[in-house]
Image (cartoon, rainbow, N blue to C red; front, top):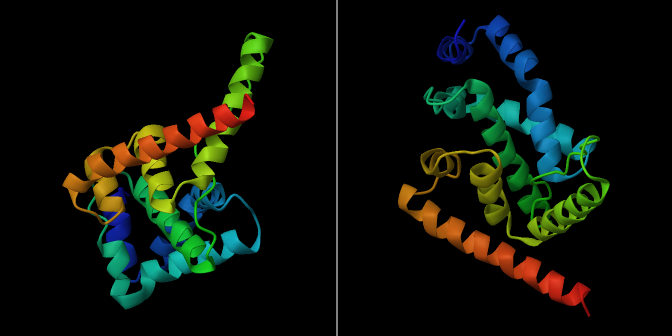
Length: 186
């Protein structure tokens, strides 16, 4: 069954379709929420429960917004990230951890590997200090490769606002990185 048909069957109240939607995407969505929250456990479970409840409530209003322009799993991950950011805002934590993560390359040059690891940690720390919207936008566009149209849809924002928001988010990130670099060289 294709994504549009699965979504339609869920909207129609088919329990087997809901089971397939949850089972087929739970691990992926769980990882995405964990990356945003930067933690495991109760917060991640709370966000997942809220996410799936919101997909069903009000006659599946949120699920009805899936238009099939992307894979259902991609759409679910984006909705889950937004829900995780909303959770952070409700809890007053501010910026969302996550962002690009360093991956060890055993065949690479050890000195370059160490430098890349340190840079990745520095960038991740700076991303955590950005406002949640900036962090999410940078994640969506720069890491996940979302188009401006997808980012606008996922952030429920006008398309013409994405480019200026992204530019400002990059400038804020650059300023944080430059400030951190200056402070570490003292």
